[in-house]
Length: 449
Length: 168
Image (cartoon, rainbow over all chains, first blue to last red; front, side, top):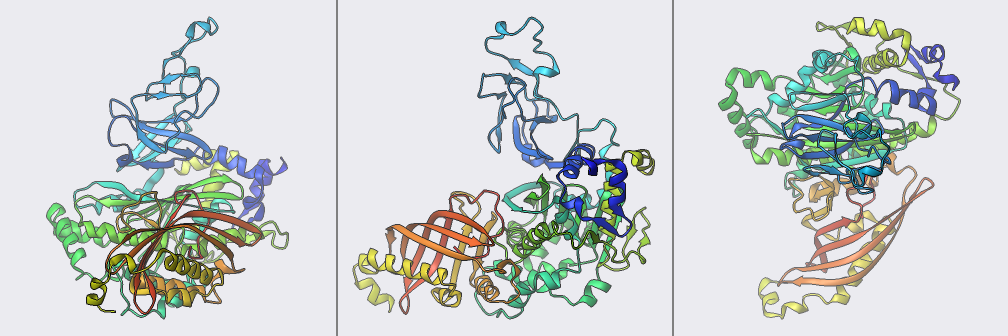
């Protein structure tokens, strides 16, 4: 495993370029699972998915199957979804409610915090068999912390607390939660699960890429520009067409009206973009007026104005979650192999908002995150093509240097691009990558954090 | 066709099962031949085209769908398929559909609900994907048979999938 050598790894990420093996070498991928997904806070879900004691959902931490469950005392646990006996996956349903977990193989039964509760034929095990040991438990992921209802887990005892690790990016999660008139978010409206044959990092690297829509999405931009608005729409097409046309904004728009902000630990957001007046119909749209009324009734006029003036498009918390507050979307990135990735996308209901607003959220999800979307399908094609092209030896180094000479410090301790087409957010993710992957950088990273 | 004329006929004669099956086979052939404009012409002006993301999904409005198009979005989808810049169709898919088990579920004065089973094989860039499921068509008679709603329930609607570009 020559590429796993720290000295070799150090040379693969350079100031404005990265080596293609970061997207194609299985040995590097294995190290990423251990050092990034094993050390970073990884988003697993939202508290509304486990409202009552016993509620659970199954997901993955890196490639490891886990189950997230609310215990009888209200505490949320994350358990490795594996029986301590013979290793079988214990929880087979995607979600549900349970009083205990029971393995279907030999009937080992566990409390919701993973402790062993009962074992059939216990007298047959060796004398040192200890049902109170962690060796006979469904192993807990050591750390589970929530911020405003968003649940993250961490496999490392050394990591800083979640809030500290999020840093200024916590304000993007605030932006999601603040938009609910009654303060609560609820996961609703189903899930998209899309896959591509390419590396997991490609997905995060595309979400703030303001230089690609005009090219990659030309087919849907032109089809939308040519579409008559006199044709029947129940609202679905209207929202979809507005978004597709917005992708066709000229380069001058991306260079002068959109910004890119980055923060420590690889986090970033695209902002100053798509204000509500442009996207959610005009402010005089009756549904949006009802929403503003509900916000003002709960939070007052000044706070409502402040909330709606936060204009962020995609916020990305490295390494595995991206979300968008204005249409209440969230995507979780699951690396499956060096060249295989699964992305699951979720929607949130804003408690206290008009029901019709959630229908807009769904229509927006279909066009932006849908497996059969007129837009996302071209992004998936790009990931697949990078996955195909990366094996060639023609381009040993991938360029990530756009804006390298013009990035400027940000007042909250980050860096921002001079305009939104800067690849500062990719360089920022690789700074975090180096911090996790290179042992000798570990101390330095923690000092910064 | 006027409403009066329809009402005076026995409802079950609006369309026969054989007429429905012939229509479904015709529609499948247009799609397999990539004659998407001709396919679009089969839909009424306020038609909807729907591929749910969940088994037994009740509404396209409160739950995400693999595809849910009102007429305006369906026209845009079809126009995009003809674009030389549709990179997710470079190279183009080839498809082969089989339709069977055609039954008439209900027949009212002006609309027939037809259920059928389908398989669709899609080949693109060295990969062949197999889709199967149930079609539900709401058919009306306006200048021939037209589609008011086409619902496609995929067997694997909630599976992880790479992009879906060709209509089912």
